[in-house]
Image (cartoon, rainbow, N blue to C red):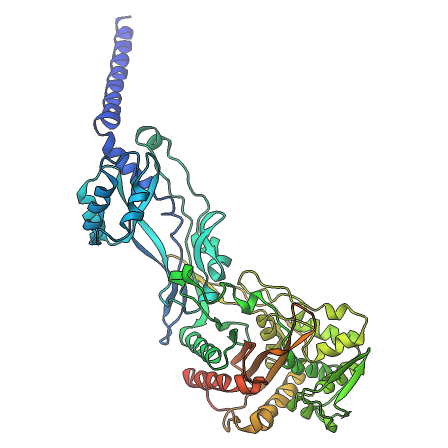
Length: 569
């Protein structure tokens, strides 16, 4: 009985002792050192975007083949103020802070003082401080002032690949990717499954905290080549300056695989200062807009006719210069009739009535089926956001004239990436491939995880692909600017396009507005690159051969030298 009583007293004493220690600790935390703990907790809580802004890098290849960032994350410090706890006049507080980091007191003084006034709430005062600047602020030991680490998105190239990369901004879920790869791979780059879990103990005793919940953040390894991207952007800028186009765009891709080597829109904008973009939109027009493409569609119509067996390159028809269809007159670009001509001349001279003849020989249903099989009726599936649907309602019409205009690229509208994919099938043996930008993920330890990009469909035979390629090489060698751009040691397959643009106010087409485009691939019979460039509404010039030939050939020369491509003839 005595032993049992002693045990009970022992347990009671231990419990009492524990209560005394716990109570003392709580008294020390909540009373004696409350300011210190609130300060520490505030440093965890006041910056809710700290964890959200940790993101993987977006990488592309440098000239030496190293992976360098298009988008990365920088780390620094921010100063935040709990206005309910400050014990200084806002003007004096700002003066202390500004002097600590080497700012002129007058710099942003009124706006900062206004932000510091008030009885409650937290405000950001200084951002992106160095470790030294942060230490200077901490040494002031100002009540209600917190120095927190922060991450922010940084784009080393500034405006390089701006429309393709996108940026991180505020969205429905806080900080998240906006536009481009930042948006389409937002979840992968952020690597977050849960955010904002509360730690109950810290909330009760110190104020606040935020528990980090982190998955594996990975980097994106793209197929882009830094030097190719810069060259493309420079040529698009030249087109804008020389011909005063509203907008120019371009894509360089591997037609064999669909890997995008460069993609750009001009005017561009600085990703690090995107709020100052006044020259254009953030949208990537190569993916998010569609256009009537004009004569670059003609090689597809000719390839379809070849594959269907209704024509050969030597097949002739009589060109009167115009055709009347369903009460509409379709004319050649120059209104001329050329008499008996073969299909090579149809291509070389971009004869509208010639491709309408091919469509008639196939029949509208078979022609439409080929066009759909080239992928023109569906999205490409490229790994970029907001891809537009193409506009092919002409193929739902019972009227022959709708199919006739589609044969030379009017009345149907296609995205530039959709056009580039379809034209690549002419180059690669007849396969419609899936364009892509990201080749692999790179995990934290450096492991590269390739992405499966094997989707493709056969639309024309390899023999047809070789035949249309031979015809396009002839176009460059003999017809393009009278053959002045023929390369003696390299075979290049190419075609220009000049399309009328629709009148959005009154309907029909405008006489004063055109889209100029140029596509080509090389070395023609084993192509490594397909280039597609275009410009909206060039001024003072009529045909795409005048505006786009030189930029295309300069890009070709650069790629040949950059990749040391051996001659093929």
